[in-house]
Length: 375
Ligand code: FA5
Image (cartoon, rainbow, N blue to C red; front, side, top):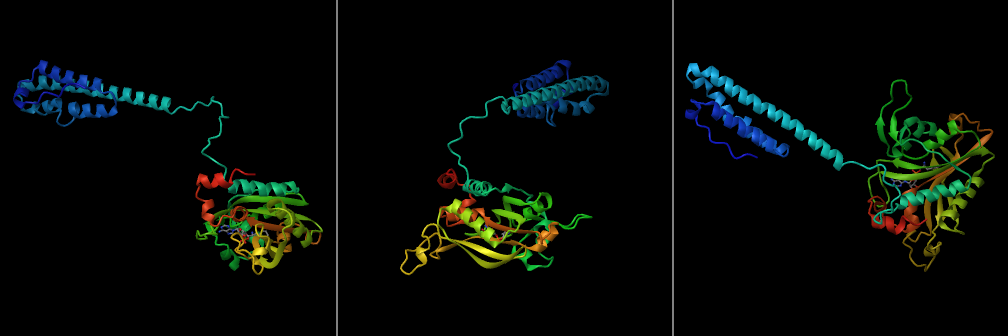
């Protein structure tokens, strides 16, 4: 930048000479040319074109000159100020272009670089991902196809088609997060799906029979976060619709699944439960895979995983309610179905002895490293 401007002297201004104005203009142009970035240019603008700049003050003093000198002084001051303004505009444009060029170079992404660089040693796959994949693999190996559905779901799929009447307390039971009311001409509003069961409806409406599908995915409920509940969690659900399916087939599928996931020889237990979309419905428990039930026997060692109950609650299940089959256009006299669904985070907790669901949410890579990479 140029040296500071010489102080303005109104007496001297009254005799403003062409030389003096040229000096002010030259100072201004030198300062503008020397500005190396937009901040420095701002400083130069204030000093040479601002309210207290020599040329601005000279302009203000023109009215005080003798009338004969005003026109000439006005022309010379006006020309000097116009030259300074033009230089400022040009330098501003040059510096902005230079800044944009620099951003393009600094932030350029070379899309031709190879993508298969070694994986960062700092990361790890999350156990909810690996256990979810493992659960899905078990079903796929049993002949099921993966089916997916939207997380922002129509109320009709999430509730109505699943035989939840409009005012059924079960809608509250699942602590629904409502997103939007019905659009004109639509049957129902939108919710964040509270379970993966609406995918059953989508599958029954669109896929040919017989049907064997498994649906993993994210679910949302307005549950408060505590050791066993999260407002966002994952479920996986299996649905079969075929001729002649019975509770025995459901039991067989559950046993095969428990064996593949937790090991051989574990008993399962079905106790009556209620879901509007299955009839009859049951709650599935499996024998604790750590103590194998011993902790619940007199004198048994305490077990942290089943809290010495000997059993672990695993899933909800049942035979597809004929009303649901009818809602999906399936003849309940010819076809029957079974379904069961479970929480993936809760399965991670059971499988790895994790006491608090919040550990699965916090994204601490040490947690993922401990459990996430294994098959
Ligand atoms: C259901 O959601 C049924 N759709 C399951 C089902 C499918 C029944 C097919 C019959 C036939 P429930 O509300 O019990 O059921 O939830 C199933 C599982 O989701 C629970 O056992 C639990 O593992 C998991 N879960 C539910 N709420 C939460 C939550 N807030 N945080 C973490 N996991 C949860």
